[in-house]
Length: 262
Image (tube, rainbow, N blue to C red; front, side, top):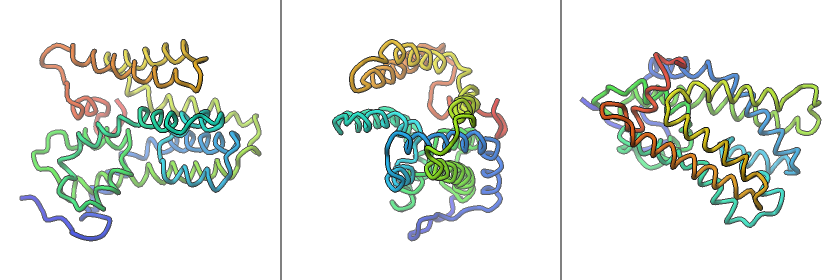
């Protein structure tokens, strides 16, 4: 029987055991998240943004890919509509994530749904979908506890490292190799997710188009690359044989196994 939800406050009822389970599942990803966040913070300050603005962007945007995508546009005084569209396309996947997890949060009051939407991330969604893929009941303290356990680790790792990166800024010596470390950290997170043919096809097309259009004005090639990659990935998924997983939740569930990267 589904347990009642709270009608006030920012947090729904949370099961402490499930919360600790969510923390444990996310912890292996904490280090690469920290490295990527650190470099994103350094990049913003090195690009000319002030420390207060950089921290404000970090706290409100909470999306490293979008932050790095719009940074060159802000530096070159690109019209704001182009900046907004770029960020929207890069973060469009979160709309899909939220729609796939909707049943577990739809009955919560809107402040609680807003907080969950803000904290929802790529890895958290994948782990959450894998953990509760077979559950018939949606929206209970166990699911909310697991979600927030992973979300808190993800948020704390990203915010802490990003703010340190902002404060370190241009003083970070090149000998530290932060850029190279960021690439390896990002690969450590992404590679396990690119083991399915449709995803791999989308990533490959995105990379090829991005390189081919790197000299497009106002970084419009990035928009084209993202659109092309999404179209190819969705098309490839639709052409998969019957009996293969098609839904977003099923696709995300393939990413992990028992809380660890496959």
